[in-house]
Every structure is written in structure tokens, then in C-alpha cells.
Image (cartoon, rainbow, N blue to C red; front, side, top):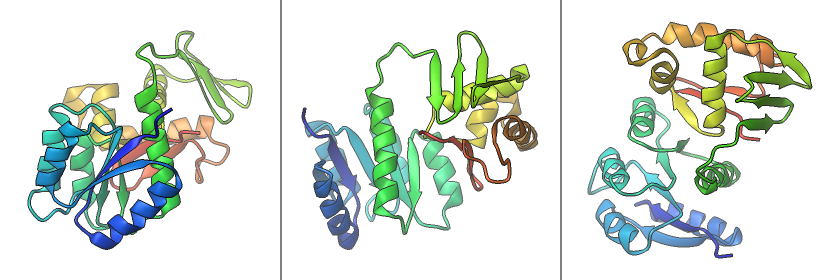
Length: 228
């Protein structure tokens, strides 16, 4: 089986060197591009299994590059951003990024996020109707959810919110995306809906809603269902 090919678009040489050794240790194949122009040239020639993209590039806005890649590339894209770029993270996710990491980041977390993204990309087209994430299990076709083998009764909107998160487990979903999926396009600014229903879901699903195991908050951005 051929090792996954990573396209790293990053202008900072120390970060490229650091990631080069990390990817090599995990037996990933790697193609590097220090500019957006080079990334756009390399990607069609050697279609990667996953793209790791720094938003702060010298020759093009990273958001624009993300949109250009998404015109044809359907694989996972993980973006790297500075700590104070909250709106940039949200914009990147809305533009089609699968996930993001804030600099500085740990190699372990980056590799874990990449594994999740690659697993999602490798899933067959026919989506399974059952899921299991730790003690949280369910059957989407039967509309039944269990926590530690005990059935949990959810309202229709709680169920829709949960299943939206489950279908994208491991990925960050923005407030806007969740509101559009669950409540519809006319409610994308009603963030209080999400806060109320997420609190209700956590009370029913989490052992300790103050320290959630499954329904994770991405501060200022959205929510993520734990992947495993």
C-alpha cells in the first residue's frame, strides 16, 4: 500500500524542516511548496492525498489559494493559522478547509488531525447508518442513540444537531454551518440557538457537561465531535 502523499504549502523554512522529519518518521511522502504559486503548479502534477496549507503566504492570500484549490481538489485540506486569526479560521472552514491548527502546534496533534481527515476521505460513498465513538453509539436509520448502553431520548432538533456532528466527526464545524444545516439558511446568525441546544445535548450525553468528552467546543469558531 502506497503511503499518503502530503502537499505542504508553507513559506517558513524552520517549520518545513520540522514537519519534514515528522512526516518522514510516519512514512508519509511529502511534496513541499514555499509559495502559493508553486503549490498551485505542483498540486495538479502530483495530486496529494492531503494538503497542509499555511494561510500566511508571501505571494497570495491563503484564503484565495484555498478557494482556487477547492475548484478542483476534493481531498482534505488542513490549514495552519496564527493564534490571533479567529475570523481567518472561520473563513477558511467556510471556504472548504477540513480542519485547522493554530501556531504553535504539537506534532502529535497535527498527525492525529491528518489521520482523521484521511480516514474521512477514504470512506466509501455509501454512508454507514451506525456509529460508535467511545461509549456513544447510535443507529441513524432507527433514530436511536445510546450512551454506555443506555438509550438517550432526544428532541428532533437535538437529534439533527447530534447527527450533523456525527457525520463530520473529527472536523470543526462552524457556528454558521451548523445553524444552516440544522435550522436552515435564514438562521445562520442565531448563535444562541446553538448554545442552548448544545448545552441540552451535553446534559443528556456527557458524563460531565462542564468537561465534555464527545461534544467539543472550538472557541469562537464552532464545535467538533470527538473522532475516536
